[in-house]
Image 1 (cartoon, rainbow, N blue to C red):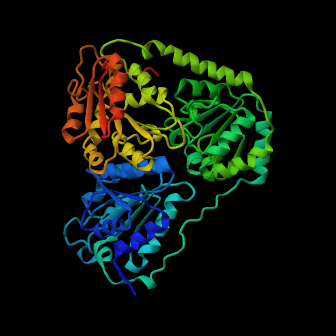
Image 2: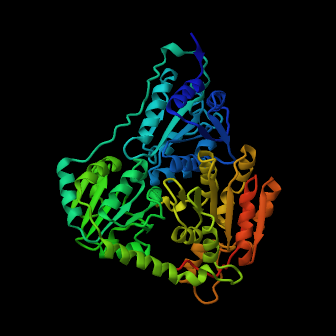
Image 3: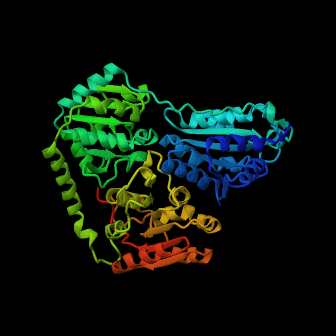
Length: 548
């Protein structure tokens, strides 16, 4: 009869549930888990800060649709995870966060790194438990993965006291290892609600569909494409749903944010707004929808159906399952003029920015950088976007080429700077065959720059393009509108034209420094050709504010 420690019990669950990577920093409280997982090929990515570990786990989930796993040792190791876990909570991303904890005998005795982290995580996590008995570790971890993935996904925090993690006396034959802890069946819509929705869809002449994270987590890409093609419905994708119908599709319009001028206009002009698996809030506020707007809402959460909006009809159910019900029931339709009207508006908007796309000004216009970067984005590219104004420029102009192929700081309302490099690392681990390109502001790059050391350590070849405007651009530009003449900014300027490329070269990566527009494309070409992680540091105009 084999005797196992707590880390080996966790490893058995992770192996059964298909976990491939754990992101974190090593520590004595969690080392048995790290060691046991590594022994069976579940790779531990040892990064430089636990916040980045949580972002990496979130990035893994956002690009694969599977649970991401991160860990921190007791005390400061777990408190460093907080920002990443909070982001996953706001974005409803399935995360399993494993925290170390002092031995039970050490509680409340001022021992090393003993801290009440349960209270810290309880309000932000979907499910929060401390392991009460080492023989139940497998049960708690299996349940934790199920909680993270089921229905509306979200972060789960599990805390393992050190004595339960290190104990070597668990009889393998006496531990209950279930065949699986997850139920894969999904809920379908009520038949009466489906019938009412079909009636609205068949009567619509100017429908639009706004699809969000729920469509991604349900794996509804094929069904969603079939549905919009059958009813000839323009689609706006947003949050984790970006790219679930690629931006190259004839019915794809742009990012589905009502603050985007095209999406706002479409909402006003539509006679049926189908909202699929996405929430109202910061980028889709209630006041974007005219009073009495004809809304059909589909969500796995019953309370989410009527959240902030009056609706004509609602369907509670999994996005994929509901679409499978709707596809055979709706009539095939053509809305040629309506689609052409929105496409024309999109082309007009892009044309409005056209001169900036080809501008030869120095310092470089941000839109010129985006236009040149766009040339390298194809169906085999995962694009990551991080920053303030940088994210605004990038999200407005750069395409999502497929599900999980555009990871952005604008995935939800929390908006923490610094997701870029960790997201890109996770994306490359998940898709080693694809190019992974990160567009990031110089301020945001500072958060994760040292994770390039992690890239080099594990052979993770990502390419970062820095939009370097030497300031905290979004805040500086918003404050400039309110500032008194001659008033100096406080804390909003960064050092001019910092050579971040040299920092990455010093770590062992490849760097390029670009100050002329004509040099952008060749520099990115050279960076992508490297067999090492690379950075292209592009100096842009600090005076140009995001225009929308």
